[in-house]
Length: 274
Length: 185
Image 1 (cartoon, rainbow over the protein chains, first blue to last red):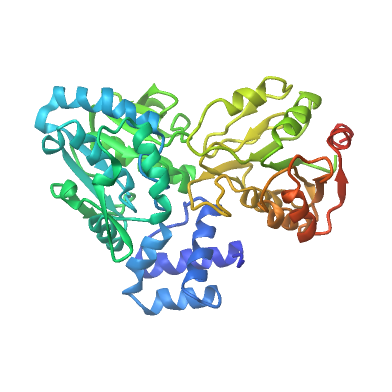
Image 2 (image 1 turned 60 degrees about the vertical axis):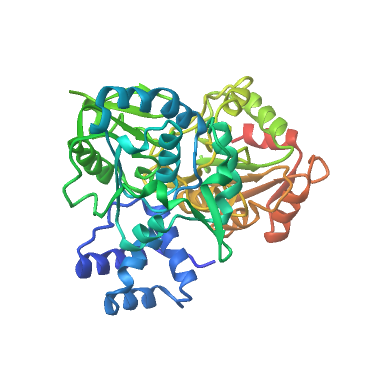
């Protein structure tokens, strides 16, 4: 197993910043290093220098690199207890308050697992057409993957089990089909979703959002970048809008300290103060 | 004081060993204890409570980027990898399982080995797979102290034997001997 040193990691960060103006210096070091190690390994590169050369000389590779660098979600309906709250309480109450003005945003999406969990839940509530969902991603390659509906086979069993635990009302196989030995989810569920390529720390966030689903994304940032991104999410949310982060992510010590109130501790549901 | 942290990895058959260690260690332990134990991915509660029952140390499932403090036991949360990050913090990750495991004992051990080097004690307990073998080797390679539970005492000996095969461990000890060793620190 290849192991990158800190100096090599910094060299890659420097190359990307100079050439593409993407700044990864505030990413969490251990996981960032591991992603790079994985990329070098999978691309059959001999060493880090080869990755640096490839990034420098091959512009078209960068979108793919950004996709590989991002960590996909682990499964669909991760933390079924949260999905039960969304299904039974939060989504019905937001829809009854806002009707067709309900906007939900999933920033930094990578695999579409959260998106398809959400649209399946809304579909089973008979409310899918009422809600406007925005999906943004750092890379166009990630966006294409999400739009294709592809579900990694390794995630299927856990996702199907979670769907039942999350009180799904149909049968999970209704939502996917096999094609050329791969699993594709039903993309008719996402035909009204608005997709965009976005660098969360630089580009202006989507506006007028009532619910942001941003789970287990901030674990890949250090606290400086976490605060910066939280500021962006805050400005996208309407007053009293909701922010849901990962079960083990806490925004209490960050920028969010005085801007968000904690609504549900075990599911990490926060509410933007007015 | 030579050592600055203890990292314990375990799987099938390790629960009783860990509770025994936790009930023996004093709450004045002047270093952190990390626990990376295989557990069900979808069950978030119950495990921490069960481990806390007889522990003198507060047992914590850390949040991401939580500051590490001595005298606490940090349990890797369900469905996250637990890394020891530079700057005395814990970092969590939802990256792919390693050896079918998330949390991965190898990853916790490797990151702790880098963070504490010769000041780390790594301990592998009973378990039914070979997770932890690579991690314990890394601890040893970076001059940390390595202990494996005596396979003859383990409920399942696969994990300890895999660790012993991957590196020349410093000590092979029974649960009582592990406790005695830790109490002398």
